[in-house]
Every structure is written in C-alpha cells, then in structure tokens.
Length: 230
Image (cartoon, rainbow, N blue to C red; front, side):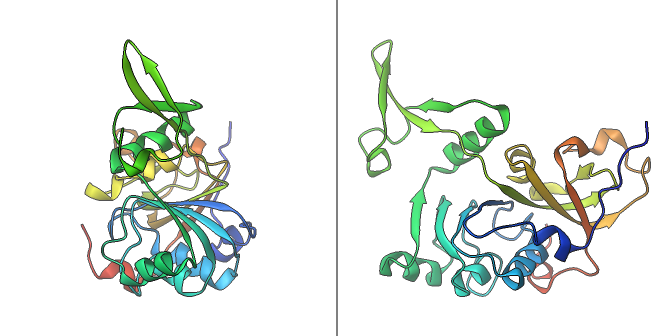
C-alpha cells in the first residue's frame, strides 16, 4: 500500500481554519510552539477563535500575535504570568480566560484524544478553580468532573517529519504536542525538516502519521523560535 504524501504549503493548510474554530496550540513557553503556523494564522485572519494552549507566551511572541490582532475570543490555559498584554486583555474583558492546573489541562486533552468524556480529580476542590463545575462523590471522596478537551484543529511543531506525517520531537518540545495531535480531527504540523519516507527511525517517532493531516516544512527557523531552542 502506498502511503499518502501529506506535504502542503503552510498557507493552504491554515486556510482550512474557519472563524469560531477551537484551535489547540502545542508548546510550553517557546519549546514546541508552532511559531510559523501561528503567524500564518494571523495572516489568514480567522476570528473569534478559542485557543487551547499551556501558556500565552510572552508579549510579541507566539500566540500573542493572535491576541494583538484581536482574533482570540477565549483562551483555555494554565497561566498568563509571562504576558502582561494577555493579562490586560483578560482584566478588560476583551478575552475570556479559563484557567486549569497544568496537569489537569494535559489530562483533559489526553482524555479528548482517547475518546473519554471527562476525568475525575480532587485537585481544586473548595477553590476558585471548582466554581461552576460538577462535583461527584466516590467512596466518600468528592471529585470535580473535568470535561475532556477536543479542538477543531491542532497546530504542532516537530523537529523531524516524513511525508506521511510521522513526527519526532526534540527534548522538552514533546510537551503538549503528542497529546494535542490526538485530540483534533485536523492536525497541521510544521517540521524543521522533512526526510524521505523510511529515513525516520520508527523508534524515534513520537506521533504516528495516522494522526497528522498536513505536513509543512519550515523554510527557515522562525525569528520567535530562534530566541530559544531546547
């Protein structure tokens, strides 16, 4: 069986994102953040987006470009501490922000990718994080019901890809990328290099190509990503 070649231009891949879409964005700070795909999404202009990302990056970097362009309606995240611009948007009511404990965010995304409806956790009981959430009791212990997270699109950064979409990450760039690649029906990956099919050692593949829809090779490392490489 001949495997499909999923390579395409960044512009053609990003053009599929519609107004109002929910978009997962990989990365933990700089490592693993798909900087070039984010800039392409800014240029594409889709609006009223819900973003799911571990953090809001820093001012003038990563998803802050989407915040500055007014394309984001809602942000599901763990913290905004490094981005004063994002904090200002939240405080002014310009964007809605939903905070999660970092492990809970990862588990909600994992559950979405695994087809599980929700997870149960005692983290955040009797705190502001529990406001408005359903509580169930098991064996005398209360648990918050944390709904699984899925998105319309996931934007992923990989170190190496092959034309079928098998992906390998480097070091901490693994972070949220493998989870998010399983939790959306449309997965767009940017890769620093694309090697011929068969050249990527199967033992180094972190995300199998079956989860990836489009592979885009970076013409050069984004100025944002070049700030730090881990």
